Amino acid sequence: MKNKKIDQIAIDNIKINSLNMAFSWKYSDFSSIMSGAKIFHAIFGYFFNINRKNNSDVNRDRFVFFNPNILPLFYEILRLYSLISENEYLNLISNRNQNISYSNWTLDWIKSGEIFLGISGGFALGNTIAQNYLNRLDKNINHFTYWYVTERELQEGSTQEALAYAGTHNLRQLIVIYDANEIEYTVDSKSINPENIAKKVESMNFKYIEVSNGQCRSIIKAIKKAQKINQPVFIKILSPQSEQLFKKNFDNSITHEKLEEFKDKTSFQKTNLSDLYSEVVEFYENRLQKIENKIKTFSNSNNLQIFLKNNIRENINDVEEFKEKTYIENALKIINNLCDKYKNLLVLSNNISYFQNIKSLNGIFASNNLGRGIFLGNREFTMINMAMGLGLHSSIEAIVIVDINYLGYLLPTLQVLKYSNAKILILLINNRNNFSLSNELKILYSYDHINLLRPCDFNELKGAFEFHFNHTKKSSIIYLENKEIKEIKDTSKVEFEDGPYYIRKISQTTNIIAAGSDLRIAELIARRLNSSIISISNIGNIESLNYDRNNSILIESYEALSHEKIAKYNIALNKFCNLEKNDEEYIVEKVLTSIVKK
Image (cartoon, rainbow, N blue to C red; front, side, top):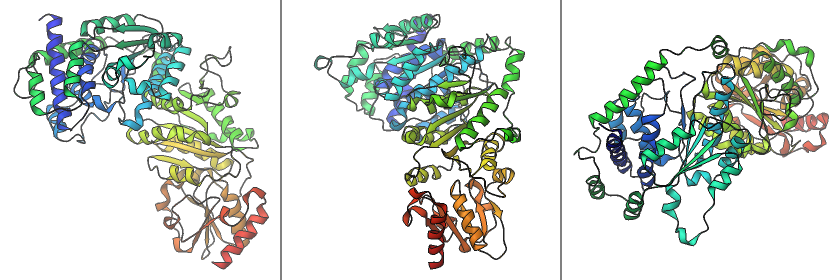
């Protein structure tokens, strides 16, 4: 069968199957499926390289999207690639929340939904940077990242950040696929001045390719051309006239009768709208078999094998001699040492001052382009999304250093991490002095899929890094106040790694409990009362600590924890004393007076 004929049969088959699933899910927008079917077939039927037997194959292509409207197309490809079973696919039609076995085979889709639309750009960049980075170790690492976007995503500020970064740093092997159907469908083109997307992306150092007729063979030619270009490529795909008429007639709504009527105008003539044509299944299986035959002849270089096995396991006692005054100075010293030891550790930040001792990967210092520091400038939206892409690519681990003022930019991705296997370490720096942080800390404490670590001194700071790299599979946030560290007697790096622990235990006394820099005040109070003191700087495993909650007092600068679960009493220091005085004795006296009243 000629390719042109099988292409049309496959596209119609994918389209009808996906429309049927979308109809079952009560979708209201079908335009993305109409225009996306031919794009998906062009990519996955002709170009996408994947090792179905090895999800961790670093040389497989990546396909990144976050648009919920094309989920039915995504599941159809998983089905054609035999990554989900026929029964799983059919169950998905009736239950979109069905658990399916592809959980580790996301094709780099993580979570879809309106709140997550802007995440895809940074995620795609992370994958592309990882590919370029590994290519230095092994020239055979030469995969592509396909980033599928729609008009809504292009309007996101984070998407513009990602495009600007990709162009500035010439991230070759990145192919942006812009399905332009949404703008055609949702606006009256006669009443607006359309943006000149070609000039815009070309000014960002992208190679611009336009597929004006929307035909599958033209899309295939465009992608084939893009793969030969040594710079990032932006492909704009317009819809054929027939698809535009369909979208206009359906007016964002669909019925079973309309679906049947449309089906009769296609090459899909089966009664069951979920069926697959045998020739379509055979076409995909033959192509995948050819890929797998090539994979058998490929082997990683020695350098790459060493890199991929280089898991970070760390004992940070060797940086004792580098003690500095502040939390952030000590943390940067630790990170610098880690970067010297581990080639698979990359560090991202929007603050250039954090890179004074960390060699750069992206040219902020001319002679430092072989390092592992990635400076983002004011691209705070993109930064953590990029880290997630890096963390899911191979054995690469990412550290993000960011001021707490930008926490709002991170929140959508922090939510996405719940559905992702990415492991990121975030250093969240508080430069606000004594400005209230209760709302921010409440949000961070609410994430049970992220470790919140608030080290109180150098011992606990070392423990925080070791805990993340040695003892957890989850992402972690190390919250640091940019002020001088005051050592506390009897803190323990080792015990911190196990969770909450007694800094000092005195039988039959009240427990004074605190985290982070609040432990300094708590320790002074405990000594005055001759009480026990408990560190919850690593709170995650508090259920395992044997202590009397009814005889405990939680000390916090700003009320952030649900203290009933931790202690019967809670003292929020900012409620009855002026923290701006920064006078420990004044604060201690105020707290002691409050405790006596209780």
